[in-house]
Length: 242
Image (cartoon, rainbow, N blue to C red; front, side, top):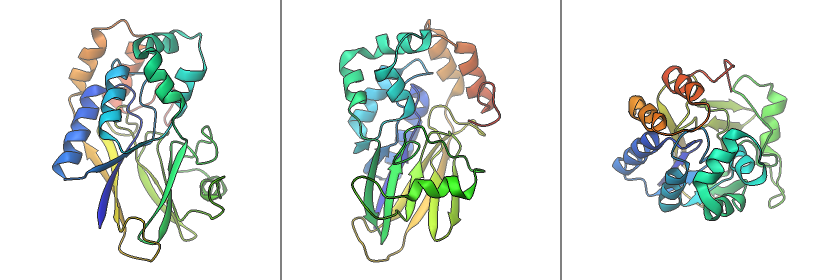
């Protein structure tokens, strides 16, 4: 049996990322997959990317990673692009949008928002038809997946329907619906196409929010007050859900 930690949506929050990595290490998990949105929002985009590259086995592209590498013009993007530098931006630009593998007889696909569409957003209360789109075949595999794990919406949940399992890992650095950093663990027999025991766990990790805010206050990054509100309340700016 192998345990794989799945993290997502770091958003430049270094205190949260460090605590999650500490928790993963304490559980003696050696394989970590990151589902994107490494940078943006928080003050430590460059440091977060460097840690992710150091610790993660596989890294997936998120929508913020796309915005930062393919768009320009807004104050927010310009600030983070300058902080990241050309080499990190090049790294983010070339990230894949999904990864797939078998574990305990399940074909698993992990992505930021959708294996086939970086911007197809699915919430826990979305219609079944929208959720089922996440399981459709990809350009590399003609089979529907059995399990899909994703990030993007910053709110962790697990759902079961029509023989499928869908789970959201939540967010390390910008959790919604909670002020605790969130990630997931999947456990099973890796690369096995035959059925075997399999589990998905959602883990919530407390971290020093005041320190995260202090680090942001020491910078001139845009939209600090909105960021502070999200960290303190777990409510996304201008919305009930993200």
